[in-house]
Amino acid sequence: MDAFSGWKYVVKQLGFIILIALLCLIFLGIGLVVGYGIIGDGENVWAILSPNKWSSILAQFTGK
Image 1 (tube, rainbow, N blue to C red):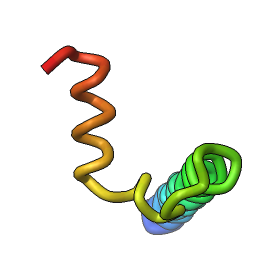
Image 2: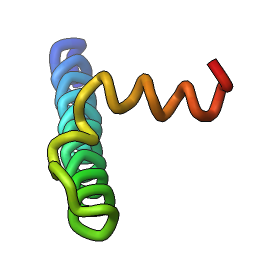
Image 3: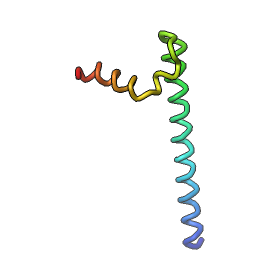
Image 4: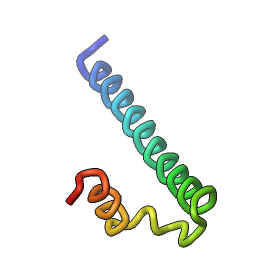
């Protein structure tokens, strides 16, 4: 096994980790949209993905 095949293995594993992380983010977004927009109060389903909504949510938890 030469040094190049070792790097190929590392790059392959890193690509796999990045793919899994991206899939996790996509499913998190889908879960937020379904939970907030469809199961929750039913207003704009995409509102949960806006920075303004997150700042108001964090303000409720931090008291600011």
